[in-house]
Structures are given as structure tokens and as C-alpha cells.
Length: 194
Image (cartoon, rainbow, N blue to C red; front, side, top):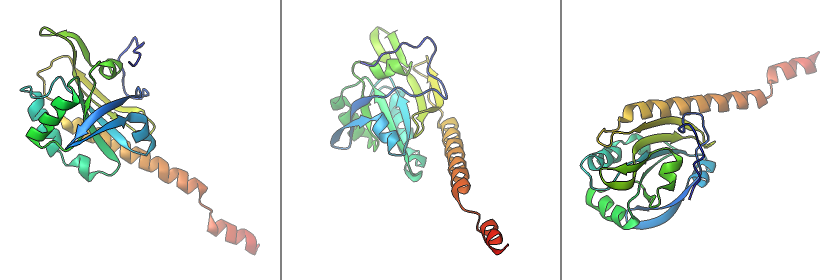
């Protein structure tokens, strides 16, 4: 179980809580570890949702499946997280051809660490709230969105804009670092000639 000793909700620029969860994609069941994935240079998009097969979550997961910018953008992975079991995830993914990992947070510790957990919702104890987070390769939260309304549908456009901005900023930082290390041949040549 992950500790959640926060007095304020997780927000942009915070370090994302590390976690490792069992998940399924297709017929494969595996362990998904946030720090391993970010340490490999990947951005991770986390989609928290209440339940498999629910009337809002099903079209939402299908919209994520159809949002080809995750597959078309290198070094970006998308994971969806709910409190459902890996078995329920397998049936859900199979029924809707979901081609991204569905992770099982059965004890709700990850949802709690990301501040997306209901203590009680419509008679169900400890349900996952709807939320989206973009975590960069340094494990910093670059985008955070959550809703107390389980029936609201996520809007992927602000997430896409945040992803584009994060990748653009990180690429600029990498270019500046590279430029600082590159020798200035023109200046070096002039000094040798004098």
C-alpha cells in the first residue's frame, strides 16, 4: 500500500508517486512499474476510471483506444487504472479491442496516492475517481486533471496539448544542453591562427 500523507492534492510539477501494478493487454498479464518506465525515457499517461463495462467508462476507454496520438508519438505510453481485477480487465479489453494496458489497483492505494479515490460512491466503498495525469521521464507530473463527478467524460485535447508542450520543452532543454557542450570550431580555429 502506498502512503498518502499529502494535505493537498497531487498537482503539476509534483513528483508522481511510484507504483507497480499488475495489468493486462491482450492475452498478456504483466507487472507495470512507473519508475522503470519513466527511467527508460518514456512519458506515461495515466487514466484513472471507476469501473470496467460502466456506461461512461466504456466509451471513454474506446476513445482512448482510438486516440492514435499515443501510438504515433514515440516514448509515450498510456495506462488505464481501476479497482477491477486483472480477470475483469481481460474480458473488458477483449470485448472492446483495447490495445493498451489496463492496470488493477484492487486495494486502491495508487488511486489514493494520486488523490482519485472515493471513500464511498453510490453504495460502493473505495471506488476510483476519474482522472488523467501526464508523467514525464523525470517522474514529474506535467498535467493533472480529476473529477468528483463519475459521469463526466474526459477531454483528451488538453492532455494532448500538455503532452506536446512537455515534449517541446524537453526537446528544447536537450538541444540547449547539447549546444553548450559542442565545441565552437570557428573560435577554436581563429585562436590557433593567431
